[in-house]
Amino acid sequence: MSFAETVLLGAIAGFTIYLGLPVGRAGAVDARMRVGLAMFSVGLLAFIFMDVTSHAQELVDTALQQYKAHHEGFGHVLGLFALLAIAFLVGTAGIATCERRLRPRSRPPMAGADPALGVEASGAAAAENVALVRSRALRTGMTIALAIGLHNFAEGLAIGVSARAGEIGLATVLIIGFGLHNATEGFGIVGPLGGVRPSWRWLGVAGLVGGGPTFLGTIVGYQVQSTPLELCFYSLAGGAILYVIGEIWTSTRRHGHVTLGLNLLALGFIAGIATDLIVSYGGA
Picture 1 (cartoon, rainbow, N blue to C red):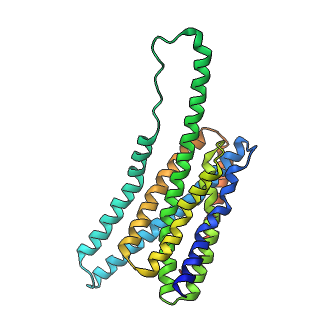
Picture 2 (picture 1 turned 135 degrees about the vertical axis):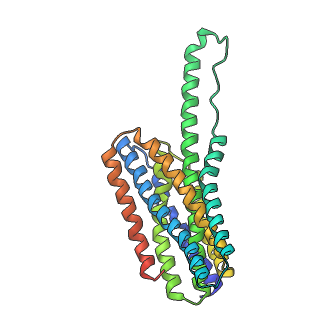
Picture 3 (picture 1 turned 180 degrees about the vertical axis):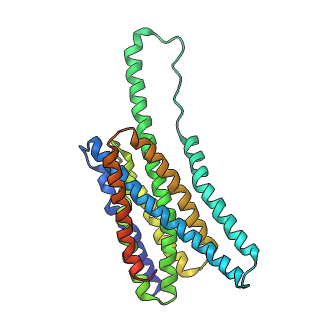
């Protein structure tokens, strides 16, 4: 498979994420639907977390087996483990710190305010609160897109490496499988937005952040094969996804509908497995 063909198909696999994103523009969504959609996305993210962390551990396990067979030194194993740990911490604590610093701080009420302006002040406070809720929801959605993008970059690496090695059948199955899988990831981005309706521009940027790395990873994977690079992106993705799952879970449980949420969580996890089976069928 040529470089141009590989890049084109990698782009198709990545940008199928746009198939699920328009759901975020749907109106008249009640609380039950919002909880269900958010928890479905948690199920998808839980599967992706399991997938990326198992791949990261597998890379370190391979290095450990090479050490046991006296093909690599212990420093190589220790270095990969340190990379995994640092990248995972950056994906969790690092993103949490950045998100907290970017969060707008509520302003205290002005001292000596005129009581006659109480109604206007109250209305302004309510409007500001709505704006803060919207801002935080969109920021959480973009964080999810970033976490998914890190995961998809590693998927793109797999496509590029397979195509460069001449494994056309495997590369094709990877493209189809990842394309289907990415189509469901759009729901994972917009699900936690709740009642916030994003703009088409925001959806366009979110799709680029989440799906674009598959395209970039395909290019890099075709040109370069690097275990540390792959491990770094798997670990970053795992840490970021774990942080996002905690955020969505905390915010969603306040709305009730626990049984519905758990059922949709399980359905999302099963959907992740189902799409990934196509990739497994190809031997990846």
